Length: 262
Image 1 (cartoon, helix red, strand yellow):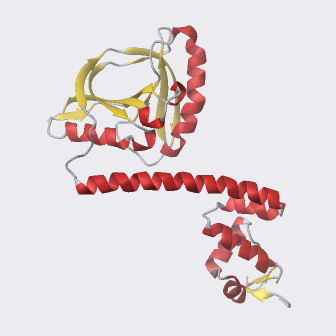
Image 2: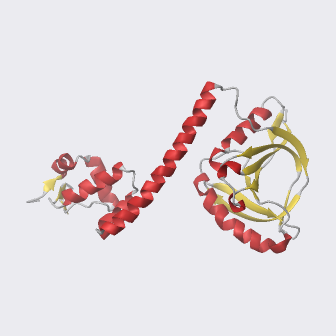
Image 3: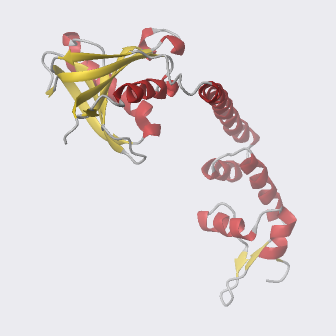
């Protein structure tokens, strides 16, 4: 490996750990100039110090490796500007979300008894005939799934739509992808959603804060002798398609309930 920096020296020169350099090699982001077939030692050329410095700076911005790979492959200032502009917007969105979380967390810590102002009522709901689309998605994919599903449901219902759109979620929350059903009530629909006894909370505000409505239902359910009896529903009474601010979104969260079995 003449005229090459071994990985240890390259690591010290770039302030990137050897383990991280190995990970960058395996991902194809920063491949060593040479790898000794006998020992497996990696060697890097002096010219790669600049690439390593760029990678370190961009990772400090939490830029995904795929986007860094695009910047290095293009070596074009305009490509870099576009990618960094997109990342800046993502960071600003995250900052706004964090500030909201801090406010809500502060309120809950100041007054733990005030779980949420959402009011819960109990009602009997009739069965609903609807057009439906079901897909296995994780929480971070909900918005994209609904953006795709609802135009299809609206087209299928035509002029026969009979109410606001909604969604069904499993009774128990899961971290991994789960079956989620988007639905639109319509007399000619392909599915009947069962009716029954429901606990209902109407939540007002952006979807990112909807956990407040779920907390209200959880607080209401405790001590009632009732249990969640099936998929929970969200009915979107007012939302993105209504030309209103997020703070004015209205969502009904409906938990089917029945008595706990002894």
